[in-house]
Image (tube, rainbow, N blue to C red; front, side, top):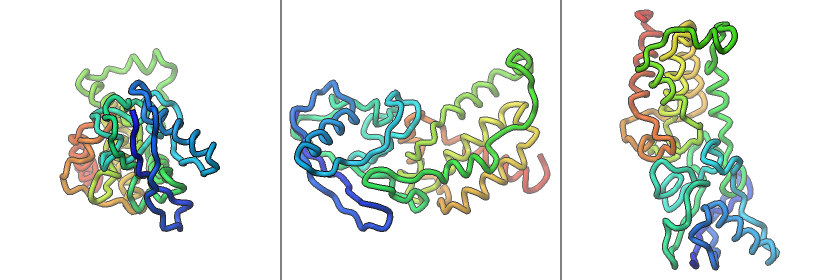
Length: 248
Protein backbone atom coordinates (compact mmCIF):
# COMPACT_ATOMS: atom_id res chain seq x y z
CA UNK A 1 0.00 0.00 0.00
CA UNK A 2 1.01 3.63 -0.51
CA UNK A 3 0.36 6.18 2.22
CA UNK A 4 0.78 9.89 2.82
CA UNK A 5 2.26 10.74 6.22
CA UNK A 6 2.03 14.08 7.96
CA UNK A 7 4.62 13.93 10.73
CA UNK A 8 5.40 16.44 13.47
CA UNK A 9 9.05 17.55 13.22
CA UNK A 10 10.59 19.52 16.07
CA UNK A 11 14.30 19.92 16.75
CA UNK A 12 14.00 20.42 20.52
CA UNK A 13 11.70 21.74 23.25
CA UNK A 14 12.34 25.38 22.33
CA UNK A 15 11.78 24.87 18.59
CA UNK A 16 8.37 25.85 17.21
CA UNK A 17 8.00 22.67 15.18
CA UNK A 18 5.75 21.92 12.20
CA UNK A 19 4.08 19.14 10.24
CA UNK A 20 6.05 17.68 7.34
CA UNK A 21 4.64 15.58 4.51
CA UNK A 22 6.26 12.26 3.54
CA UNK A 23 5.33 9.43 1.20
CA UNK A 24 5.34 5.85 2.46
CA UNK A 25 5.57 3.54 -0.56
CA UNK A 26 5.13 -0.22 -0.94
CA UNK A 27 4.14 -0.74 2.67
CA UNK A 28 3.12 -4.29 3.57
CA UNK A 29 -0.13 -4.72 5.47
CA UNK A 30 1.73 -7.20 7.71
CA UNK A 31 4.10 -4.52 9.02
CA UNK A 32 3.65 -2.94 12.41
CA UNK A 33 3.29 0.83 12.53
CA UNK A 34 6.86 1.18 13.81
CA UNK A 35 8.19 -1.05 11.04
CA UNK A 36 6.46 1.25 8.57
CA UNK A 37 8.25 4.21 10.14
CA UNK A 38 11.53 2.29 9.89
CA UNK A 39 10.98 1.91 6.14
CA UNK A 40 10.20 5.60 5.80
CA UNK A 41 13.34 6.50 7.76
CA UNK A 42 15.48 4.29 5.54
CA UNK A 43 14.16 6.16 2.52
CA UNK A 44 14.77 9.54 4.19
CA UNK A 45 18.33 8.54 5.08
CA UNK A 46 19.06 7.52 1.49
CA UNK A 47 17.80 10.95 0.36
CA UNK A 48 20.03 12.76 2.87
CA UNK A 49 17.07 13.84 5.03
CA UNK A 50 17.28 13.50 8.80
CA UNK A 51 15.16 10.51 9.87
CA UNK A 52 12.10 10.90 12.05
CA UNK A 53 12.91 10.53 15.75
CA UNK A 54 10.44 8.31 17.61
CA UNK A 55 10.60 6.36 20.85
CA UNK A 56 10.49 2.57 21.12
CA UNK A 57 12.02 -0.30 23.03
CA UNK A 58 10.47 -3.75 23.41
CA UNK A 59 8.14 -3.63 20.38
CA UNK A 60 6.06 -6.26 22.15
CA UNK A 61 3.37 -4.06 23.72
CA UNK A 62 4.95 -4.20 27.15
CA UNK A 63 7.02 -1.08 27.82
CA UNK A 64 4.79 1.73 26.48
CA UNK A 65 7.68 3.67 24.92
CA UNK A 66 6.07 3.69 21.46
CA UNK A 67 3.69 6.49 22.36
CA UNK A 68 2.29 8.40 19.37
CA UNK A 69 -0.87 10.25 18.48
CA UNK A 70 -2.11 8.70 15.24
CA UNK A 71 -4.89 10.60 13.49
CA UNK A 72 -5.65 12.28 16.81
CA UNK A 73 -5.92 9.04 18.80
CA UNK A 74 -3.33 7.91 21.32
CA UNK A 75 -1.71 4.68 20.06
CA UNK A 76 -3.98 4.72 17.01
CA UNK A 77 -7.43 3.39 16.12
CA UNK A 78 -7.29 -0.09 17.65
CA UNK A 79 -8.46 -0.31 21.30
CA UNK A 80 -6.21 -1.99 23.84
CA UNK A 81 -3.21 -1.78 21.50
CA UNK A 82 0.17 -0.05 21.68
CA UNK A 83 1.66 1.54 18.56
CA UNK A 84 4.24 -1.23 18.17
CA UNK A 85 1.43 -3.80 18.07
CA UNK A 86 -0.71 -1.75 15.67
CA UNK A 87 -0.47 -3.28 12.19
CA UNK A 88 -0.82 -1.56 8.85
CA UNK A 89 -3.73 -3.79 7.86
CA UNK A 90 -5.88 -1.42 9.91
CA UNK A 91 -5.22 1.29 7.32
CA UNK A 92 -6.16 1.49 3.64
CA UNK A 93 -4.15 2.12 0.51
CA UNK A 94 -4.05 5.85 -0.16
CA UNK A 95 -4.76 6.86 3.44
CA UNK A 96 -3.36 10.05 4.93
CA UNK A 97 -2.00 9.49 8.42
CA UNK A 98 -1.20 12.29 10.89
CA UNK A 99 1.48 11.41 13.45
CA UNK A 100 2.18 13.62 16.46
CA UNK A 101 3.83 13.37 19.90
CA UNK A 102 1.99 13.47 23.22
CA UNK A 103 0.70 16.98 23.87
CA UNK A 104 1.01 18.01 27.52
CA UNK A 105 2.93 20.67 29.41
CA UNK A 106 4.34 18.00 31.72
CA UNK A 107 5.65 16.06 28.68
CA UNK A 108 7.99 18.50 26.88
CA UNK A 109 9.08 17.47 23.40
CA UNK A 110 12.68 16.24 23.21
CA UNK A 111 12.74 15.82 19.45
CA UNK A 112 10.10 15.15 16.78
CA UNK A 113 7.83 12.46 18.25
CA UNK A 114 9.82 11.86 21.45
CA UNK A 115 8.68 13.50 24.69
CA UNK A 116 10.18 13.58 28.18
CA UNK A 117 7.98 11.47 30.46
CA UNK A 118 10.29 11.55 33.46
CA UNK A 119 7.48 13.29 35.38
CA UNK A 120 5.88 9.85 35.68
CA UNK A 121 9.08 8.46 37.15
CA UNK A 122 9.25 11.25 39.73
CA UNK A 123 5.67 10.50 40.77
CA UNK A 124 6.54 6.84 41.30
CA UNK A 125 9.70 7.74 43.18
CA UNK A 126 7.61 9.93 45.49
CA UNK A 127 5.81 6.94 46.95
CA UNK A 128 5.36 4.02 44.62
CA UNK A 129 7.08 1.43 46.78
CA UNK A 130 6.65 -0.69 49.89
CA UNK A 131 9.21 -1.13 52.66
CA UNK A 132 7.69 -4.16 54.38
CA UNK A 133 10.02 -7.17 54.53
CA UNK A 134 8.08 -10.15 53.22
CA UNK A 135 11.06 -12.48 53.03
CA UNK A 136 11.38 -14.81 50.06
CA UNK A 137 8.70 -15.53 47.48
CA UNK A 138 7.19 -18.46 49.46
CA UNK A 139 6.80 -16.20 52.51
CA UNK A 140 5.10 -13.49 50.48
CA UNK A 141 2.79 -16.01 48.86
CA UNK A 142 1.79 -17.27 52.29
CA UNK A 143 0.05 -13.97 53.08
CA UNK A 144 -3.73 -14.46 52.75
CA UNK A 145 -5.18 -12.11 50.12
CA UNK A 146 -8.79 -12.19 48.96
CA UNK A 147 -9.08 -13.06 45.26
CA UNK A 148 -11.07 -9.89 44.52
CA UNK A 149 -8.34 -7.74 46.06
CA UNK A 150 -5.58 -9.65 44.31
CA UNK A 151 -7.34 -9.32 40.96
CA UNK A 152 -7.81 -5.58 41.46
CA UNK A 153 -4.14 -5.16 42.34
CA UNK A 154 -3.07 -7.08 39.25
CA UNK A 155 -5.45 -5.09 37.03
CA UNK A 156 -3.95 -1.84 38.32
CA UNK A 157 -0.40 -3.15 38.00
CA UNK A 158 -0.99 -3.73 34.28
CA UNK A 159 -0.42 0.01 33.71
CA UNK A 160 2.74 0.49 31.63
CA UNK A 161 3.02 4.25 32.20
CA UNK A 162 2.92 5.16 28.51
CA UNK A 163 1.11 8.47 29.07
CA UNK A 164 -1.76 7.91 26.63
CA UNK A 165 -4.17 8.92 29.39
CA UNK A 166 -2.45 12.30 29.76
CA UNK A 167 -2.21 12.90 26.02
CA UNK A 168 -5.92 12.19 25.49
CA UNK A 169 -7.32 14.09 28.47
CA UNK A 170 -8.36 17.68 27.66
CA UNK A 171 -6.92 18.63 31.05
CA UNK A 172 -3.73 16.58 30.60
CA UNK A 173 -4.61 14.77 33.80
CA UNK A 174 -2.40 11.95 35.07
CA UNK A 175 -4.95 10.61 37.52
CA UNK A 176 -5.51 7.29 35.76
CA UNK A 177 -1.77 6.57 35.84
CA UNK A 178 -1.33 7.73 39.44
CA UNK A 179 -4.44 5.89 40.62
CA UNK A 180 -3.17 2.67 39.06
CA UNK A 181 0.17 3.01 40.84
CA UNK A 182 -1.51 3.91 44.15
CA UNK A 183 -4.15 1.20 44.10
CA UNK A 184 -1.95 -1.67 42.99
CA UNK A 185 -0.40 -1.38 46.46
CA UNK A 186 -3.50 -0.20 48.33
CA UNK A 187 -5.30 -3.45 47.48
CA UNK A 188 -2.57 -5.61 48.99
CA UNK A 189 -1.76 -6.06 52.70
CA UNK A 190 1.93 -5.33 51.99
CA UNK A 191 0.96 -1.89 50.74
CA UNK A 192 -1.39 -0.86 53.54
CA UNK A 193 1.45 0.03 55.93
CA UNK A 194 2.36 3.17 53.98
CA UNK A 195 -0.94 3.68 52.17
CA UNK A 196 -1.70 7.13 53.62
CA UNK A 197 1.82 8.46 53.10
CA UNK A 198 2.02 7.01 49.61
CA UNK A 199 -1.18 8.52 48.21
CA UNK A 200 -0.45 11.95 49.65
CA UNK A 201 3.11 12.04 48.30
CA UNK A 202 2.20 10.79 44.85
CA UNK A 203 -0.74 13.16 44.45
CA UNK A 204 1.40 16.08 45.65
CA UNK A 205 4.10 15.21 43.11
CA UNK A 206 1.49 14.87 40.38
CA UNK A 207 0.27 18.39 41.10
CA UNK A 208 3.82 19.70 41.28
CA UNK A 209 4.57 18.31 37.82
CA UNK A 210 1.77 20.40 36.32
CA UNK A 211 -0.75 17.74 35.34
CA UNK A 212 -4.38 18.84 35.23
CA UNK A 213 -7.33 17.58 37.23
CA UNK A 214 -9.80 14.86 36.27
CA UNK A 215 -13.20 16.11 35.13
CA UNK A 216 -14.62 12.73 34.09
CA UNK A 217 -14.19 12.86 30.33
CA UNK A 218 -13.24 9.14 30.36
CA UNK A 219 -10.85 9.63 27.42
CA UNK A 220 -8.06 8.12 29.54
CA UNK A 221 -9.86 4.81 29.92
CA UNK A 222 -10.89 4.80 26.24
CA UNK A 223 -7.32 4.99 24.90
CA UNK A 224 -5.38 3.06 27.54
CA UNK A 225 -3.58 0.19 25.77
CA UNK A 226 -3.90 -1.93 28.92
CA UNK A 227 -7.54 -0.90 29.44
CA UNK A 228 -7.04 0.38 32.98
CA UNK A 229 -10.45 1.06 34.49
CA UNK A 230 -11.54 4.53 35.60
CA UNK A 231 -12.73 3.01 38.90
CA UNK A 232 -9.16 3.18 40.18
CA UNK A 233 -9.41 6.99 40.21
CA UNK A 234 -12.37 6.66 42.56
CA UNK A 235 -10.42 4.36 44.86
CA UNK A 236 -7.44 6.73 44.84
CA UNK A 237 -9.71 9.63 45.79
CA UNK A 238 -11.10 7.61 48.68
CA UNK A 239 -7.58 6.68 49.79
CA UNK A 240 -6.59 10.33 49.62
CA UNK A 241 -9.58 11.53 51.66
CA UNK A 242 -8.96 8.87 54.31
CA UNK A 243 -5.31 9.92 54.50
CA UNK A 244 -6.17 13.61 54.82
CA UNK A 245 -8.90 13.16 57.40
CA UNK A 246 -7.22 10.39 59.35
CA UNK A 247 -10.38 8.29 59.17
CA UNK A 248 -8.71 5.35 57.42
